[in-house]
Length: 145
Image (cartoon, rainbow, N blue to C red; front, side, top):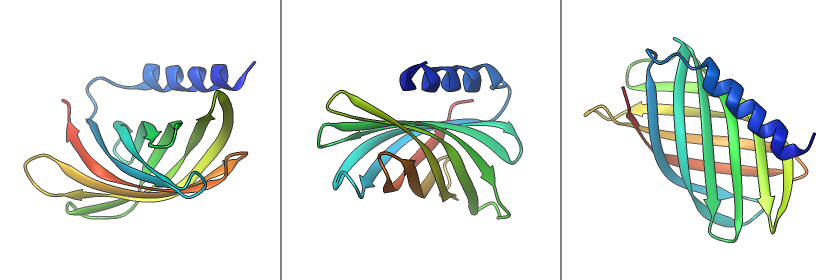
């Protein structure tokens, strides 16, 4: 089974596990990858399975002909209504010039309540695999339900 098939199966499992009554957010932001030495634009989701556990798919298109897709699970750590930190773990599919590499994500992030239902977020993660790199990501998420 190739890397893209494994990643697609992981995304489908995540989507089937999602409870439509649970809290969900979609958003976007800006990213920077240390190995590709480039900024990028991100699309992100956050779908809560339980109070402290969220599935977080994401996609980053880098300005230098690279992209990555992520299937993460975020575990909410102790926080308050204004700042909610979380641990990140998941799968990463990195593509460069038609070559794909599968890796693992590990990191930390936080959601910041700014009012009017939106949340700013920031993440720092490290991709472990053939495409090792530190990724910095920041943006805004909006509720969809």
